[in-house]
Length: 130
Length: 415
Image 1 (cartoon, rainbow over the protein chains, first blue to last red):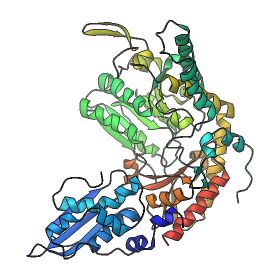
Image 2 (image 1 turned 90 degrees about the horizontal axis):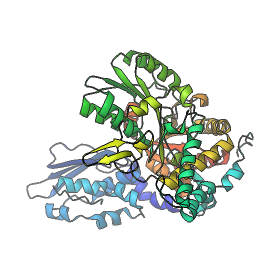
Image 3 (image 1 turned 90 degrees about the vertical axis):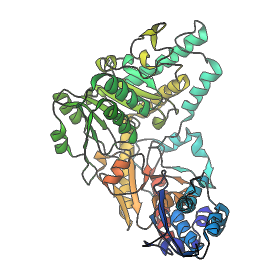
């Protein structure tokens, strides 16, 4: 298979076509939104924390390319049950490993938008896409 | 397979002039369909720039020695060729800039902001302009209190000319419009637009970045007071652009850059400016770029602008027909190739334009995806982005066939 079909592997297309945890989340504790200025991909993330500061529910909304939206869907599946300090520890390597596809510099920005929005929700301004 | 083309241009011979078209991308033939972003360069242009650096590199208008005279002769020779190419009366009506963007900024700043525009004066643009013909006018609004008004587009991608009439008044000082849209390919009726602008005493500024490479332009017939275009979209080097202006318009415009070359004399605290066009060319100009653009103009003239236009109409017609047969694909802009340049923007159901571009890339096909620096137009059509294929002298019907089969692959992936 050639490179495009490396990019659009089954699990990416599956998450793009049938996104997990997509929709609004009333009463969410943490909310953030951002877009990629280059391409207009948009991700909104909602995280609900319970009394012991653990993720009890997570949802995303957004629109954009398959990579950005599959990445957001996959990210939400990694977060349930995590404590806030564990949320902060979710990094590029973890998300990229989950995605499991080779990414050019431009498409890396698509792939990392969801993580960037999670960081924004946690009040960490440093851009992980840089 | 493609039907044989009418012989308008000898495309195999043209392709052979472009070294980059001989390379492969991921073991596939390079199919370059992004000339609206930047064109490829023929060896004649590449050789001309390299020849300048190898044989007669010297600064222009200053050196008293042979190399400097040769450099000045070639640089000014390029100015003459460009003047003839667009029907200017004199080479003095041609200012070398770095890009269409710089050209439009000179007009907005030097004519608008620093000169002719007062609070409440109106500038009429259109919804389909490139950002480079939007943002400079925002500066004039912010600094001088100018009022900006915009002509909307019809659903078919043409301008609402009746609305244009309603927007014009005695307060209108500048009308600014693209001769050809970089997204829709629409060729706007600029001659008529300029005529109506002049009737209310306004000047007409023309963004010809997408038109100058593809069709014959006569600035006097159009009635343009200013007209801007870039070298790199018309087979020339990057970093060289042109601002045409009528003598009265250029005289009424203040320079953007102060420095060497643009002055007549300088004293502590004051200076007198050089004549048009030199007062706009502060600093050492892009000499190799100007010379390369002159050779690009020679190349285009030899092919013939009428033949180029006819060739692109044929390819565009073929593309619209073939793409039109694909279910789940939408194209934007006029469907009549007489009103449209070789630019086809499209979307495919369920596939984001960036994913379309990624999949085509693997097939060796270069197209553009995104908002094309025309966000107001994207908003008008309620689109986050489109994919865009654009054609030029080195494209043929087989390139369209490759595009269409790539689009089918996209549909398979996102089925």
